[in-house]
Every structure is written in C-alpha cells, then in structure tokens.
Length: 93
Image (cartoon, rainbow, N blue to C red; front, side, top):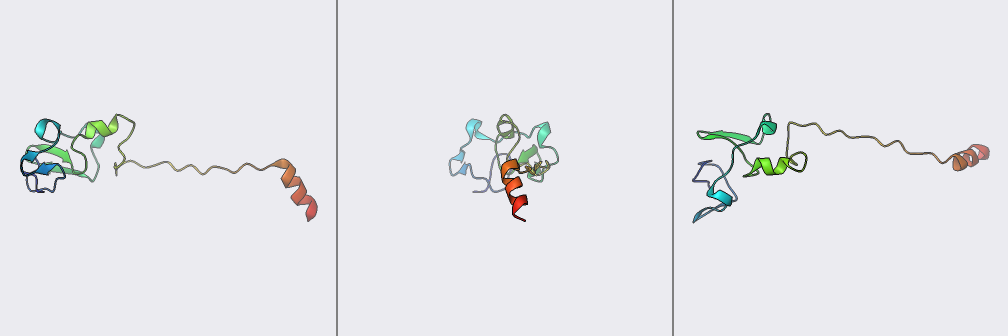
C-alpha cells in the first residue's frame, strides 16, 4: 500500500488500512553508514530506506545486505596442488 505516515506517496510493505504495522507506527531515519546508498529516499521529514523500516537493525550484524554503495571483496581461492598427484602427472608426459 501507499505510505500515509512518513514516506507519503511511496510504496510500503508495512502499511495497512489501519495504519503502519511497523514497531512504533513509523519508519526510522537512516544512519551514517547508509549515506550514499541508492535505496535512500528523501522526504520532507528526513531520509529513509526504501527496503527496511529500521536501517540500524540491518547494520548490527555487520553490513546491510542491500547496501549498494559498498564494494564486495571477492577472493579467488588459489586451489592447492597435491604434490604426489602433480609428480605422477608430470611422469606420464
């Protein structure tokens, strides 16, 4: 439904006919770690996340799973070579 409390006009999964169903009855502001994310929307009352009503809760376990402004470090695991098998392969040639 369309939010009628803080993010007026934006689509919200917590909005019901009775009002906002999130704890406290409204979404919470973003925190400093959320700055630069493309999921942040700016309203008259402040800056809010489009995905999570409580952004601070997503950062408690490390990093936010939908943070678009963070680069993920992909490590290429070098495969270990078994020296016994490598010597047998070399002897076959």
